[in-house]
Length: 488
Image 1 (cartoon, helix red, strand yellow):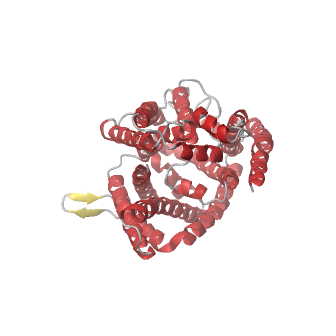
Image 2 (cartoon, one colour):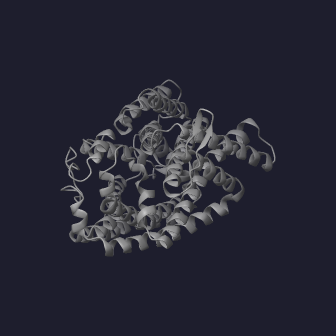
Image 3 (cartoon, helix red, strand yellow):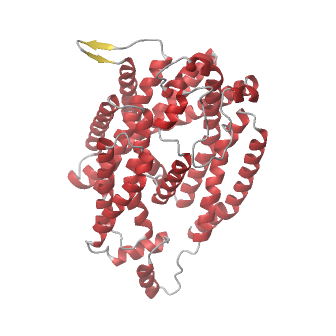
């Protein structure tokens, strides 16, 4: 099962680097004045790809030589820059754009949080190209899409963090209590500044770029962010935003690039293929692995069609193949390492086949099919092989106390310790998940309501936020804290 985790980590890292390649190239081409197109006979390298090669090449050198402290320092630095930038740009938008001006360029119902099964927004009068974009991206049946996203989100959350920098951050904490605090604090401090900036740029683009977009054909909506920054943001603030965005890119890129080579160097080489070497040898191998992963990522990014296509493949198709095995490992006692391997492999094969043969299909709609295919691999792999050692299962069950189908293991544990009680907090945990989803959504919507000056929505979202915060403090934080100190 370790080997399949390493494979998944490498594939997901390559996918993310392809995404970075496409994104940073488009961003730099739109916002910087230099044309870096390279012509070699009949073969041309577009300017956006040259920008991407340069930026990613320099960032890779920084990642390899900077070490963990420079990566952490960069992330802290970029957070403060981005927070200041988001407040500044939100201040400008708030005092320069009225609600009436916004409503003139958007269709009826644009400012409503809730929606029906079909997309009811009609952009024909203001920006007809958006209707085509909605159809191309598969958003016509927004209700179905939302249900698929919710379905995918629930199962992905049950599965836990994917093998990558998210998992490494959680594993670096001292205890489950510290991991929970880290996750909650991250959402609290990141979401409001992030969506203040997103909403600010969306409002600026809608109000000031729509007239120009109406005259254009073949609009690339993925370059609206850099175009908005380039054309509409004041010069001094523009430099601050660019510095923050570049630092954010470097921090995220470094985290992705560092994650996969760590699995290769430690889990594959150090623990299996070439043990008992000095640390410098493993560091050199991790450098080589990082360079190869970045190279493959740039290669696939060179042929990428759009940012949206890469994003959906990673988050829907690839993660669909990850989800089944990582849900079952928590809830079913009969699940074993063979089931994990074959389930993950089936998911990876399904997501790869989708990318090759069904590239025009919307990934999120295929999430259930990939999930079922992976689940079949999990079941066959587990049931066709012996179960894990009961002593191992008992030790895991007593430590973790998972929900689900663990009755045979519970019976064995209670034979040795009749006082042992299984996890009785399923109802409370489910309630906390529901409240947590609502709490997290309020951090998304209140900055948007603030900038479009929809005061009733802003007031309701803030009230709901504070109520959910109190509920989470009582039913999530305090029980976690109590359990933590009882164990320690």
